[in-house]
Amino acid sequence: MRNIVFATNNKHKLFEVQNILGSTFSLKSLADIGFDEDIPEDFDTLDQNASQKAWHIYNRYKIDCFADDTGLEVDALGGEPGVYSARYAGEQKKPYDNILKLLRNLKDKSNRGAQFRTVVALIINGVEYRFEGIVRGKIIDKLLGEEGFGYDPIFVPDGYTQTFAEMDLNLKNRISHRGLAIAQLANFLLQQ
Image (tube, rainbow, N blue to C red; front, side):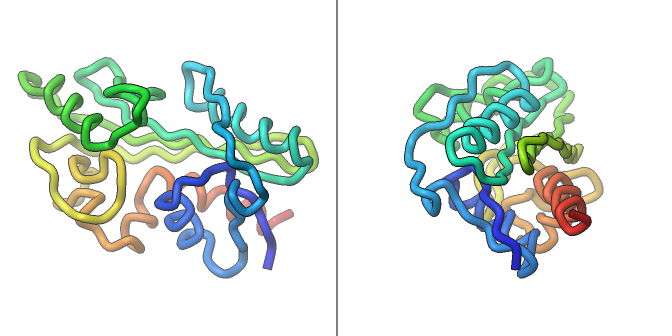
């Protein structure tokens, strides 16, 4: 079993990613390596933020690691909330408040198209590799489902009738933005 550090302490992300990676990899969180600070996210793109987070941990601990950044990009809002998805309604990063703000901003919009996009930055031996996953879908008007996190209760992926929050975790991980990016990461690591 190969150990790999995921530069996050988000328990939902850790659970989802470990489920995707399966038993071939043992995922370690920031808490597992004794890191309890906030990692800077100073940039305006998902790519730059994922890279910044991964390098922050690699430079501090000199261990192979990866980080992700994910954004919900809504067509009618010019790609908002995008890189600011987690703090769309403020720095307190409350998912329910973010959802309410998004629904308010979409109130009079007929175009409900959106996409989730995840960028993963992996650093191995001081070399960075990137992987991206995108899933298209639409934003619905009410929250449905108890699973998942973030915007999952209002996002229905194309070709499905359930929100991410209503889906079985295995199905969600097969089709989600994060699932697609992490699958690429896993395939890459297996070839190393």
